[in-house]
Length: 368
Ligand SMILES: *[C@@H]1O[C@H](CO)[C@@H](O)[C@H](O)[C@H]1NC(C)=O
Image (cartoon, rainbow, N blue to C red; front, side):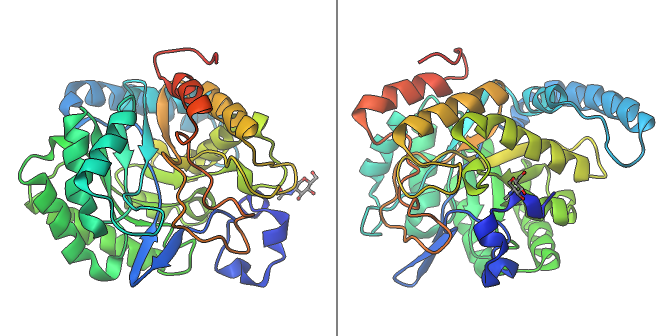
């Protein structure tokens, strides 16, 4: 099933070993920096410990009931249950949005620019960013705080982790209330950049460091859903399962089916876990507005809206980070991105951004 989730083009590609899941180029070299994009979604709010504790107890009972029925093979985990998990554990019915603080030419956005971007994204519960270069930990967390949002902060480079963590610790400056999650790496295993054991070591070490600095929230690593299914220990080491999943990169998927497809992959991730209590958050999902078709998966502005509606329907209560806030012209396409790499932004076009905002509003239905 894991392999089946990849696209045919990719399945036959010699680089498949490295890139087990066809997707947008996950990182990019601009100057000497290595960037990655991502976004993140509704999470466990540490301010709601009593609710979370009650939810964990309820979920534990439900899971014990389920696992009691079928020890292995197909555990009967319904989509409703998944969305129930997201709702109770992570939910105030809110979504996350991914964001990078770079200009089209790869230079750093200023605090004013980040402030103005964040003001447009304030309907989201939190903003996911991928690394701490460009002073992003400071600028984005400041802007998020000003808009009553949280941040899903990312350490991009685990070789340089302590420095990067220090920037996050400095940005928090003793007040962790703005921090929804700290993630260590984005698709490192999928990219063939680190082994699962290296990533797990980094997550554990980052968690220790962050706890010493007073952060009690979730620490996770993010990888593609198929890598997490293949290496469930990545999720075991994380405080919840953080999986990126894009229906577009499966050549059998249409925009209409994006939601059910991603929900099914979330279900597969959940089933791969020994610990049935672990929540699953889809830390990236979306649809490109332009580029080449990948089989049945066709990029267009119309299909982007169709896919977002479908995703909203499948994840009505949250548990999803939409990818991404704005088109990212600083990125480069490669052989696996179908010319879409720069075109995943949701809020670039004045004639569609209100409709998209309406679709993704967690308090409303799915109408446009
Ligand atoms: C797409 O569907 C066909 C027919 O069911 C199947 O043979 C193929 O493996 C599928 N491709 C992917 C990438 O899942």
